[in-house]
Amino acid sequence: MAATNLQGIVDTYGCMPEYQAMKSFFANSKNSAGIADATSKYGTPKENRKSYNTGWGIFKKNWGWKDFCDWQNIGPFYAFAKLSVQFPTLKSTNKLDCFKVKTAVASLESQKASLSSIYKDENVRTYHLQAINDKIEEYNSFFSTNACDLFILDKANQAAFDQAQAVANTQANASKESAKLGVYVFGGVAAFIGLAYAFGIITKKTSV
Image (cartoon, rainbow, N blue to C red; front, side, top):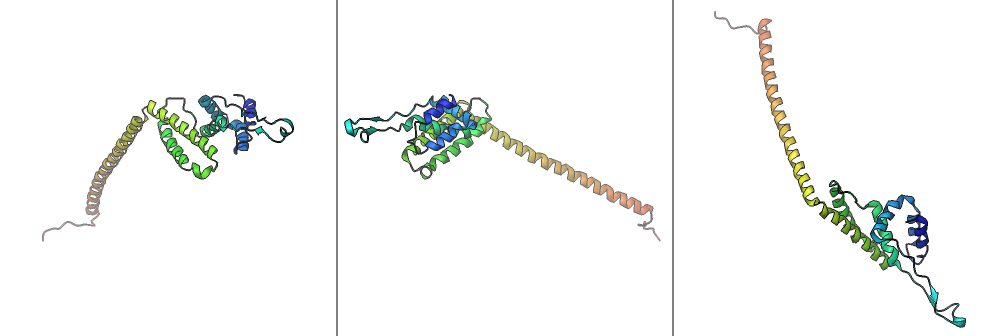
């Protein structure tokens, strides 16, 4: 979606508490990947409906205006795009991403728990909750499709085996070094005694 087109759509939502934040977010090119993820998820958001006047005659100027704030059209899109900057949609089947997904879902669940303290406006809280649930569903789908639970378990078992093997190797090497040290000490003592005899430091007992 062209940035200018999106900016025009956002401009119709001046009724929303996050209007200025949305304008800044969608104007920032660094957020293009997140915006693309949101577009793939929800499609292009619709413009807010235009206000119209239902009055007549002299009352039409100041009374009878019908205003709209269709936050449902752009709220989840905006919240999901923001999430996708931090938690991008995973398009590959790289099983190493299983670890990222597991960590991300835990973080997203934590964000859900804190929504009430962050967003006081009920509508804002509602569309952020929808976006988080949609992102969790997306990541859980990746986790299931790629059998991440088995992959993570296999990696954990392999890591445990490698650690046990490393400990065993360390102990074996320590035993070898101890054995070598014993040989060196014994050989050193024997050599010392030999030299001591040779230089008369130790004298043999002779019978009288």
